[in-house]
Image (cartoon, rainbow, N blue to C red):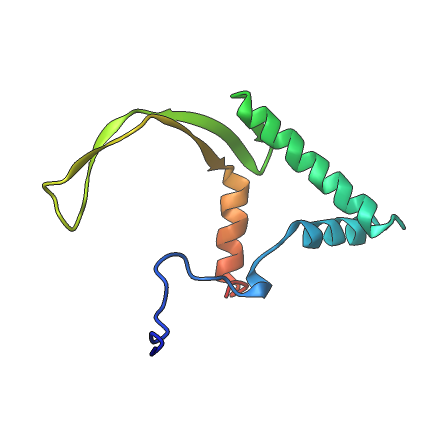
Length: 122
């Protein structure tokens, strides 16, 4: 039986490794900046605990505000009718749902713009 040629799968392109920060990378960076000799697993546990706390607060519908960084909040999206772009006659219901919204602070936006001006991105 002949095999199918390799086709690209639709969807999101993978990011380059150096452009992605993982939990482990964040824990390592924290350990380097704090300068304390903590076990790597312990710092990773702190990062995971912080992520869990943030997720719990968002699940409860609370806002999370970090000065000079931004605000995370949940927003309720209304139910609506959607269309299939390939067959505009096909209508379907899109249910209401809660989504996470992030509004960056002015200082963070300025820092990002400054980094782009210096050529620090890709």
